[in-house]
Length: 267
Length: 263
Ligand SMILES: Nc1ncnc2c1ncn2[C@@H]1O[C@H](COP(=O)(O)OP(=O)(O)O)[C@@H](O)[C@H]1O
Ligand SMILES: [Mg+2]
Image (cartoon, rainbow over all chains, first blue to last red; front, side, top):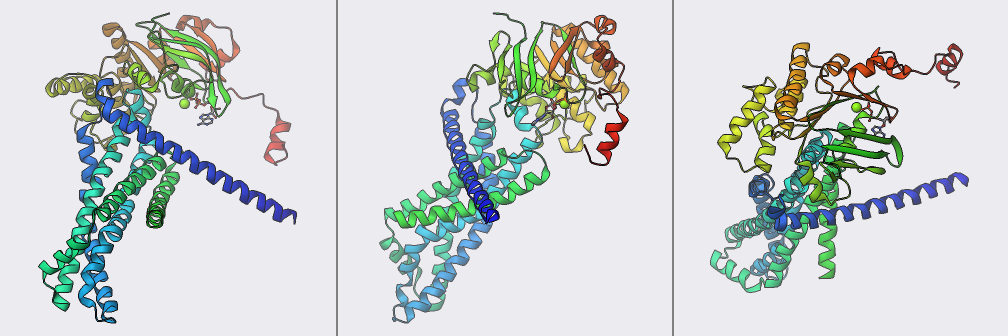
């Protein structure tokens, strides 16, 4: 009995600790966002300019390099959805309506989600490990004592880079996914590409596009901030760094799915 | 208000509310080389982190060039820190940048100089520390001693009026270590630079120091010239300069108990 109580108390304490950590995490993330945008605007006049070159480097490493995987995965999803769509609509003799299914689900759901997950796996972990090893190596401290704000040198470029590259990747994923679906549909049930795209354009609304890009921006915040905060939290040794890297991926993907679900339920 | 490069007033600091540094007072004058000594664990690294803006003190204040380092906002603190140079013990070079890019970083970020001039200055500083020709190597391609020397080159890139060096010559071969000592003296004599050096190397300390500050369990127990420290009658200081371990007295009984796990 006493043991049980002890364990219960431990459980409650652990949960409490996790809650505190979560709040601290959110607090730090919000502070980093505010500092980043403050430095983006005011940096040049206070001697802490965010360099365009650093943002471009982040766009390349976080965005362009994910492009092939994103296109491949998005195209695969497009074909899968077409196969499934034709299969189930055939029951009602309505397989020619499959383009509407793609048009309604890809921009709104699948393109942002699949892109977010891929980028979380690549950029989120890369950020955590890069910043974590900079911390271990004393590089963050070195920047500070050189009078270079680590926020403007590392955090802001990573955040802004992903805020630019993720929407572009999501747009590319949307087009790649729809195009692959269209090619499959034309090959199997012979709907011409013009008819397909006309159907797509007739049902996709501004609200769908707002969902598409709104999620891209939301996921970009989640991925970059989780990677950055976990990286900055590294101290001690190499195994802490390894753990932070791994858990950043899990956390990023979990956060993306949770956010996606919340958006689907609330909006 | 004093305009000394650095003034430390009643500084108490440490980790998670536990003081490791106790009520320390220290000032470094322009053109002065101060060597900070102390046994392992005496608080040298912690003290240094308080001095260079990385660790707000629990009590007291640190002033750089007459301006308080910790009572200003972060941007103002970063601006103050532009005026000092720090060579970390392990180098702390940016691992994604080459040697030349590391040394150029403060120049690129804080000066209006053109690329060509920066290139010349970078090669001069590398020449200073005996690493001319290593510009294009990455930190991962350097030995520990070379990393330290690049860190020194980076610390003095902007000719700061105050430079901190943490164990700059530990682990260097004697010839290079001696050259580094010469360099520190030259920086003082030609540029009027103030240098604070944390070191274990007695010989080097005696050679370069205008003043030696001894930390013992977080207290400054001595501050004076080389001649004064040699003449000091304080037992702990004599132990330090004669390299006698600072252990508590050896009691065979207690030691035995410890070994069998009873104490
Ligand atoms: N990160 C830390 N957290 C808690 N205590 C620390 C930490 N770093 C050092 N200490 C403690 O502070 C004291 C002084 O350490 P340090 O400043 O590293 O001494 P030194 O550099 O002279 O060897 C030691 O007792 C050490 O255990
Ligand atoms: Mg130390």
